[in-house]
Image 1: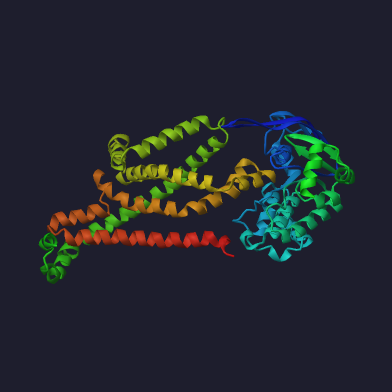
Image 2: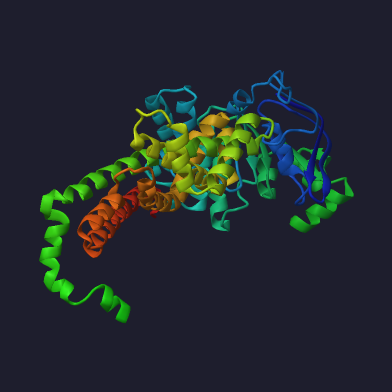
Length: 244
Length: 243
């Protein structure tokens, strides 16, 4: 479904060039739940943001559903409709109600009529237990509620893949559970997911494959059992000894 | 204190009914004020509209170019020149250039010249205010919009711009208040505006106090009205901030 070949990303900063991704090759199949872990600054988020071209790769190829996404003639907007993203800081639109947040994109892009979009939104809200918040503004919600709305907003586009960029890192500990619960239900429904997270419990429970990134490279990848019980790379062993 | 007493002797108060009569009632002189107020309000109203339209376009061009330096190169250059020239020269000079040079053929309307001059002038300031508003909106908002598949245009119109406008409303209000008062130089091209009306009465009656204080009071009332209106609009836009 997603194929990444020799992906490089260099940021040109005032302090010189920063090589954040140093050649990543990955193949993500439909229905997979790939969890990416690793220390800060290892390039996890940048890798995720390259997938939907929020960052333009410096070198390499990304293929999605048979099309090269970083080719000049690819329609980026169409690609992103099929590839939802959930952000660390939710990024809900503060000037719109919850319902408007969810229906804005499908209605603006004329994928649904306002009535259809609202119906779908209410159904999704019921699924995450927030139907009573449809008319609320984001500022009136808790962090966990905001993130669940953000997930619903991405789902309203009926994406083929969902990308999660540290979805629980900005939450109070007691709210992490409700967001992970929604993600687990999505995973059980067969959604293809790529998740950058520090939640090792989630990785162990939900992932079909766990990647360990450090210094712009994927140093180890394995099924969760193997990954956590028998890490091979010394840097992964060191990382796990600190976080587990 | 002494000089004030000399300029305005206490006897003024006992003579006030007489002065008031001479300034406004006799020979229907109040019409200088009423007609002048009409001209001032007309110039201000249309100049504000031109300012908003022009300012918004320029702000969008400038931010569009800043986000992607390959796009809108020529438009951006034009906008930069416009901002530099308009903000770098006095409004009175711009007004006179508009009337005596641009509008040189005899059958054109002075008021129209003033509307254009003040509108074009205000547009430059509004543009920078709106641009700062757009920059004040978190980058995550744009990313969220784009990640849903919305185009850059839709993201700007539906997500960033409404939030930007909310943030800059006080500054925009400030600009409009300044504009109302700036139109008082319209007399330079012989437009009988509010200020000119008061001045005309002064030159007829030789009493400066009554007409000029009246003119000042009317400007004050206009500005206070505008402030109330903007306050209402601001509260409306801030509905989404209440917990």
